[in-house]
View (spheres, one colour):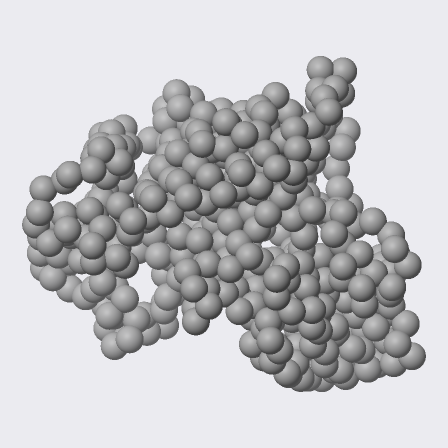
Length: 498
């Protein structure tokens, strides 16, 4: 049944398959759904260690990986072979390389590589399974909508139909990236008994161990926002689709980058879907389809091909169906205008936050990809005392002390994070938010606070940038100067969502 209008879910309605909602008694204070991880310690006794690495500028997005390997040498060889396989496949499937097989086929040449043939066959297969929801010939349609974002005028139906009918107007980004993830994992298996590969929010796990996965909240743009769900992923794939990470505006309306091939129109931005499946191509195809299809058409697909699934959308667009359970624990906030503001003198206003924009220098101007640095973001008060660690990004926890400024500030305490599935994002551009609470979860008073971003890149630079902003009764902003590792950063204080 639908949530009541007085419920916190009155704006957003979330549904998930029963196994994704098998919560036991575990739930985080943030409102995220947390599934218990099975205890496999007895079966997982091994001398292998975990190694991690991360890059920006891979397939137009970012890459994170964790490998369980017998030695650092095996891990390094696995990393290099995995990256080499990604490079090999990108040269075949890339739309940006005029010499790629994909670019040649778009110009009218026949398909020569087995890999491109496999990707196109996957589109044909999933187009048939989803009754046309997935289609490879949308490049011309997408181009018309991108032009509309510049002119402010929507394309007419005749122009869209002509673009859709044009031969070789191929766009294979979604399943092409998923295909590369699957192939790269097949190579990594030779060097690591278990692991997790995440490219732009498409994840594939292998081996006999669980990996804790967080599902990003599609309605909170901050990269450190509390997830809407967490679950253990073992020897399977998960993908998330939605228009919240990549969208555009035509006149007064905002649209998702996802286009329905049946109508040739983009979807609204208020839909997202996460799917767990046996492989990444299937998970990606299903998550896209679940953003488009109604309940009756989606249910047979998820029953036959999905291991788990979760759908989020506007309440007035999606009703309940017998195949889905309501995610009652999800806590989506009401409209900002409906939230109260604290009036007590000196108190941090309710629903105010500090948004921190971080611009890491990526592959542009530095080669095709760069290893992502370790990053720590924290807040200090006017007396330079630590108030809150906002977020930390690191592929291996043992190197966290290399963020020396932050490490001293926290007194050497450990910090842990999980892998996140989310709609594909652009590399290098990140936003994190501070909600005005300290590390104990207590609200802080109004005043001047300094945001510090520390960056340490392997074979790169160790730098930091900072800015002080007045957090009072009015909005305020400041700019962090650029560094050898970052562009100028932004610090903005004001109502959430402003």
